[in-house]
Amino acid sequence: TSGGSVKIREPRTFAGKSSDVEPFLREVESAIKLQAGMRNATSAMKAEYLLHFCSNDGVVDSWIRGCRASDPLWDSDYAKLQAALRKRFADSDLEAKMIHKLENLRQSGAADHYSNLFEDYRQYVNWSEEYACRRYVQGLKEEIQTLLINVRPKPKTLADYIPLVVEIDNDLHNIHLAAKRSESKKAYSTSSNSARSGSNSSKPSHSSSSSSAPSAPSASTSSNDVVPMEV
Image (cartoon, rainbow, N blue to C red; front, side, top):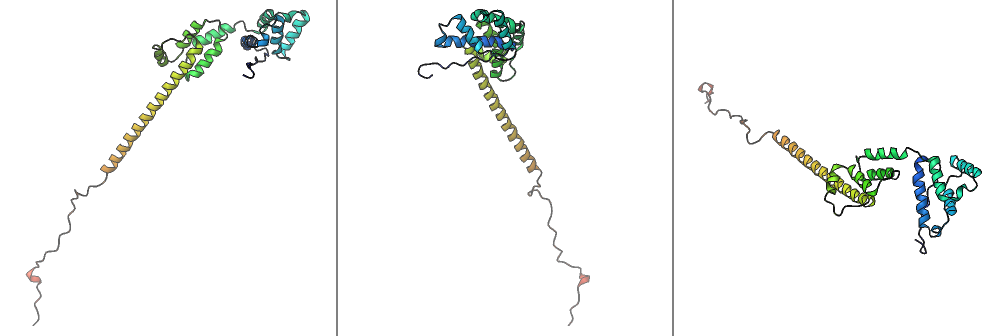
């Protein structure tokens, strides 16, 4: 904030993509509500604000020009402009497609990735917060679902659920990593001990050596070998 004013993130520029229709309209509505200067705006002012964020070239610009040519007052009614934009650019089957994606969405990796996908698809469907939370939990890994059973009080919104789930998932990830490191150390220790044991058993033992020292020659000699002394 600066000087008591709130910095508003402007809506995206709408270029005619069907999947952007609802997010774009929501962003425009949110920006209008948050701007002090727009709170008492007329319908025509709101419509003008919406059109300001429509692409000024391509199919959207052509559509706007055609509508204005056929009805000069076409863009003076904010609600009618929203309805016209939906009718022209929105995918009539988009909600059904997104519901199908949500119902088949399952967490297979990190919880934050799953949560981002769920929120992205959910913005196109008209689900209550309670039902959206239930579907969100059903798509989580069983290990996380089990841990959520004892959570009290229960989160009531996705905005409450997601940070909790991401934190649990991160904790589980760290626990699993620690367990893997511990197993690796044990395996290495066992392998090293086995190697040392094998090396020791292969060396000859000095205490059990059975080799005999060579026997000294006998001091006695045969009488036949005696040489007579000369006198």
